[in-house]
Image 1 (cartoon, helix red, strand yellow):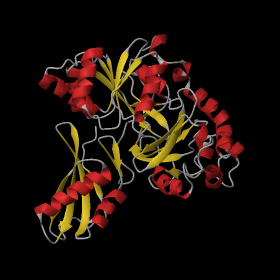
Image 2 (cartoon, helix red, strand yellow):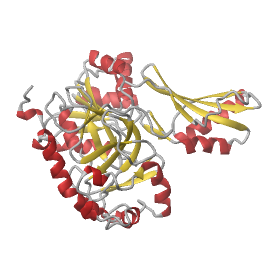
Image 3 (cartoon, rainbow, N blue to C red):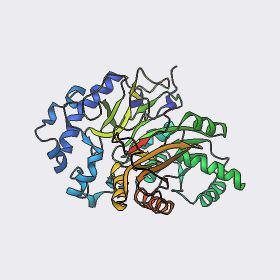
Image 4 (cartoon, rainbow, N blue to C red):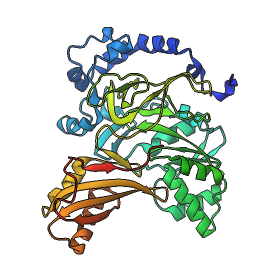
Length: 414
């Protein structure tokens, strides 16, 4: 299939793959040198000659920076662990994600690379788009809003929660586009159906932050909303995104992606599942081989839509035990914090699942006393620590497997 010119955001998307590689690595050594002007990168990449980083093989020799280590590094050297080139006072926004991990937003245009993914989702000038990602401290709302506005779209800043109020705005403004988690889109449509509110204006959706199983995608399509998904992080912006072809996620032109063996920085063979490691070209907050903790694998060939960058299969689990639940990261250390607050509890395991197309979580806790009142108190602590509601079940000592697993993600993949 030969795509029409207006099917692509720019000519970068359809470059010959070898040309893309040569052009990216021709400038990468300058990106590394620029990053090393920041004290955090100077320490992390000590002894590295930026001029030597001119190929994937050379890039693979650099140490990875694990996202899971950023919390401690930022505490040691606030606010950003020394990895920011632009001083905090010259940033556009200073943000905070769960963890907590702190991020700056630079003053550059489309620093998160979201305009490309919004174009691929079908957003065009004059469209009205409802954005249900959070605007409070976290970057999600601002991140995707900037991409939609770059295309001349008007954005309704819905944020999270207040479903009834959001539906009032949707019925009044009649947005054709939706941005947010797929779970919340279903909630909006279900609630509109129950309450008689009109949400029929939605035609296209760009979703992220939660699983999009085929059953949910099909249900949303059956209700008139065609959705595509993207994979993004606060530190990197959009890493990869779907097109209408629906065959894998296409790597963004603003990053270099590698798949490595978990726990190492060594690239795996094409098609093998490994951890996603990303290098970004952000001049304000560059990331050199950031190990995301997410698993995926490269797909062979190029997308039928004509975009020629690498493709990944999508999110295939976590390289560590951190889990993203309803768009929020939950870390093993948070489960440990619950145990510290309730010393009467023994081994803990947080089980993540899916029910009625929603993420669920349940804390199983060994305890000598199977007290229902204690379970209610622990449930309140669970919500306080993770900012998410979950069930708590007390079980007898020795009932949980002795396998070291703190978070068991049992959601189906795909």
